[in-house]
Image (cartoon, rainbow, N blue to C red; front, side, top):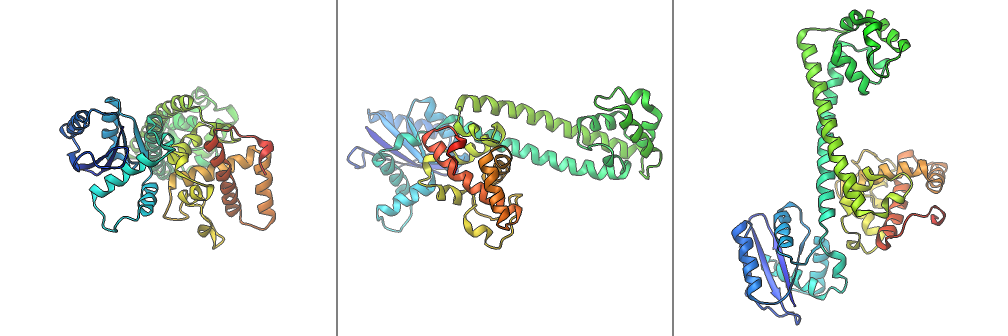
Amino acid sequence: MLFVGIDVAKNKHDVSVLNEQGNNVLKPLTFSNNRAGFRLLDNTLKQLNQDALIALEDTGHYACNLLTFLHEQGYPVYTYNPLIIKEFAKSLSLRKTKTDKKDARVIALKVLSDPNREQFRHDSCQEELKILTRHIHRLKKKQSDWKVQYTRCLDIIFPELAKIIGKHSDYAYELLSRYPSPQKMLDAGVEQLIDIKRLTVPKIQDILKVASNSIGTTSPAHEFELLEIIENIQHYNRLIDKAEKQVDELMAEINSVITTVSGIGNRLGSVILAEIRNIHTFDNPAQLQAFAGLEPSIYQSGQIDISGKMVKRGSPHLRWALLQAAQKAARYSPAFKAYLRTKLDQGKHYNVAVTHVAKKLIRILFYLLKYDSPFDENKVR
């Protein structure tokens, strides 16, 4: 059996190949991040005429195409968090000089010596999940930008409408798409507005009343802009829905115990799983807490911004999802609800109390995911 370590970079990758005694069986090899380079690696390993386990650091998109190639060739592949490799390198007492070739050897030594290597076998489903959840995040961010423009435009054309109906509801978009000004709504009257789903006669009468006294400014340019903005918002709604269906399919395949926790469904569960990736990377809940950026130092001032701007370290996506999940758990789980109430009774600010709930949730999630055990309300202490 051979043990292969690959140090991944943008344009080239360095390889170290060891036998079971930890000795080099191949001179250090560097190959390009292209099809020719991948074939060079494959041919080189096949010429050694032994089975090979391949390991590399989980360092983001630079390794994506290489991982796909290795899976296609049937190699067992293991991915390690860079922090694990860094700590392992320290344990080897290597000289402090750092080279890519030495990094590749450290990775090879890690997979050679790791009795729990199967816990780090590369999971393509987790990779897909992270791609999709990050994609959804970017789509929602772009949609949010359009919603800001929508609010600005509506404040000019019909500022009173938002006090009558939810401005981001589907029927609000339909109403404004058909009748993009107060005057056009007045011209349509109850007879035509009633065709819009969820608009009742009393609500229509309220709309027409404020429309007749609106201070809004309208022009063909304003109306055109409003229609374009609504079209873009709805376009992103469709894209997000499609992506979330893909996530639902993956979550069904993964079948994680995370969704057994009260308040955590596929939306939040997928983000948490995608950002954690491999729970075996973490030895204890404190490490996971630090990775999420929820370690104690972040709230020593006693004030927390729950929107996710508490610290600049850790995964902001994971931090956001955990804080959202903490609020959901405190709503649907009696145990978490009681815990939140305890923190509030201690005089803590609501956001600080939610952070305490999130930390408790992290401890529970750590053990649920580590041991693949479903959530049990009666065991929460």
